[in-house]
Length: 271
Image (cartoon, rainbow, N blue to C red; front, top):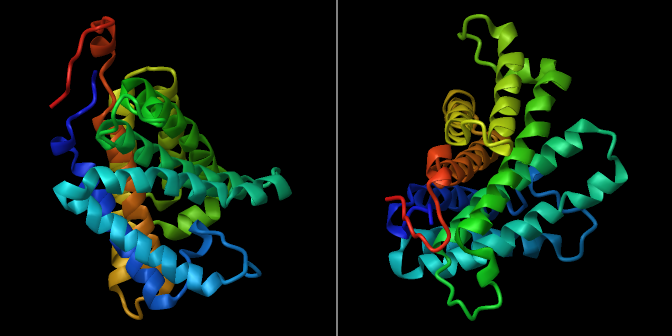
């Protein structure tokens, strides 16, 4: 198969740091991650659940950093991300005509695609396990498809919400007015590249780089600049985690020639 070995998955560390940041924010503010964890205000025991979610994010993040607990942490992470993405479904059903809702759902399914990829290669489940079907190269391929589809509404939002996107572009950047269109087109191109298998590895790495630039150029300075608002700190942590998810998918995306050279029964581990 074409998946990198568990010991060669930097995305595990990147994902861990993002989860630790989100968990710390949940404990500091006593709440979920704002629009990225859309738990309704009327939900019973909302505050205790927010603290519990923060503790779980911290525990899973730390677990990903410890070799002996990585497999167990990944087994918790994947279903947790499924539940996280499902939080957006009520909004989709209530307002499917609003692109911003699809943007939010795409961000959460992007996150899920990275966690799914890590589960596929690192869950270390026995063949007899009920969930063994979600591991291996075939499952990772489905995760890549989810990643690709997730990028389409994210990229489209840069055109529909061009003014809001422009407001995020640092003032010192030249040709500020073109970046919403350039970045939106880039994300759509990356999604289509992975989806139709046109230079998929390059497309996935291009998306990873783009998210990394968002994190470092927009959200890191915002988080470091007083008064260190909840929005800036949360946005930095979630953007970091999005980047980790994209990294996981990109690292485990084979080049087209590798796919052509694959034959049933042949095992090839990318190290």
